[in-house]
Image: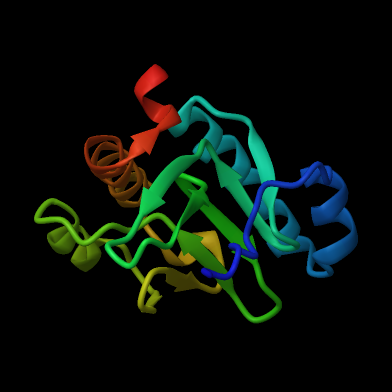
Amino acid sequence: MAKPNKTTETQVSVTDFINSYVENEQKKADSFELIKLMSEWTGFEPKMWGPTIIGFGSYHYKYASGHEGDMPVIGFSPRKAEFSLYVYSPTEENEPLLADLGKFKMGKACIYVKKLSDINIDTLEKLCKTTIAYINKHHECACREK
């Protein structure tokens, strides 16, 4: 039997989470700015996913192995060391955008940035929108309603 997904939507207040979890004032301000931007780009209000991820919208995935679940379409986590941005899908459109993003590190499924001023927000918007389009095309997605 497949293990249930640990990252599920919760009823925790996003504002309460940021105010209690994020100690650095610049990171707090950047978190609220990301919420504003991602809400505009997706048309969805922020929701907590698991204990530390702020997500926008949701989609359903199912792997060939049979594992399936729901995840936010895009999102971020204001981790202690840096932001984890869950905004990237490996598409032909997204690959060249990384060159214009600014100062970041790439993980397997996320982009790590220290602060918003390190990156190009217009490029981040393009990354988010192409990722939303990719998820919309390949998964059962709440973004189809927008």
